Length: 283
Image (cartoon, rainbow, N blue to C red; front, side):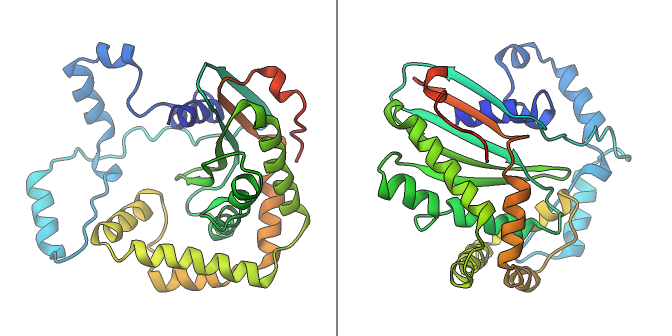
């Protein structure tokens, strides 16, 4: 968790998306009731609030209950500026005496409502989602350099990112990073086979379908789509959109995403600058 906090701070560089949700101890201790009430009045306004519900619920009764129980001021409040992705390479090393080095590599991504969202999902699924993913197989199963390794993608209203996390000992630090970057270069050079892409599509569709078996999952999905500025996307439409992913689209997404300009590297553990000297970060 700590390396992800450091990574977000480094990637978003002073912007709200990079701040810890819980805040700093100094700020929390300094908050007064007046501060919190003022913040609520300024930001929790009717045009910015999304209330989602799923299950055995009447829409009419829910609307009536919300109007009765809540009294959000009208207006949109202060939305703030859109988040900006980094445009240069950066590396941050936090050295401590822990047993393992925790690494996050991140690249600029896309917003939630972007037309290429499923292409990016396909890309990160192939690289690092589950035990069949290429990074899991290369780094953990074949080389035994990490216990946990995965890719992740964050989609926000105005921007996003794609990242890779793994934990390894100091002895294998440079090799693990180099092997990961080698796989990213392959993604930019070679198209996926139709068979591999079909497996990826099946995995994405399976995860989505299983998530929607939960009433809570359906509620969260509806609320997220509304909150992040997307039109409502039914399960049927989402499955059809996933089926439309082509090998050329994955290749193009890899070439757009994996670039040195914008890559952010964060390391937490016993590793020092010297451990990174032999790594060629170019992708």
